Image (cartoon, rainbow, N blue to C red; front, side):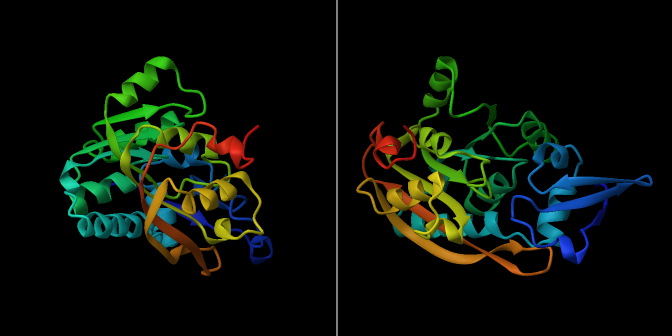
Length: 260
């Protein structure tokens, strides 16, 4: 059984932090260490800590929600879930893959993350979740890695609790989409403010332009509670499931001003 950890949230006066600035204190053997919520390498190094923090303490629902919406969309088109070949971007320690295996019966899943600690945690915690796990920066893939991923012939891309906040830049997500068949599925979640036109960040512009482009049909777009904040306030996200209708041009990001 994974260890149980002593987790302390900071004092109330320090709770007014941006989501990517939030932190907790981990108390072990009389020593207190400050760990940012986005210090995934440090969190993954502790078996069970990620689940205890985000899924037990903060009630994260996103893998379940996104997988349920994907299942509904596939069912509406009479697509067999078991035949999917999924690329799970920002895979972490395999929470999304576990949902895809258990609830959808997906047979082929490849995880991808920039952190070797994420891959190690996935193999440690969920050794049967992935058929392969790639550690790579999707903004600068080598030719060998590109060929390796192309051979999988993916028809579905998932990315849960990984987009925005600088974890996965738009260039990386766009690159991952290029490995999909032209009628492939995408399923991901984003913070609700990312769809607000007042948010001018690159990833926000990319997602908004993609949703309204000729290259994607949106099947599901649902606002839901991703998890709780440290104060117990629901953090609202959108879960989106769509299907590509055509190959996205290589200059798409440049055309919308996301990259030069």
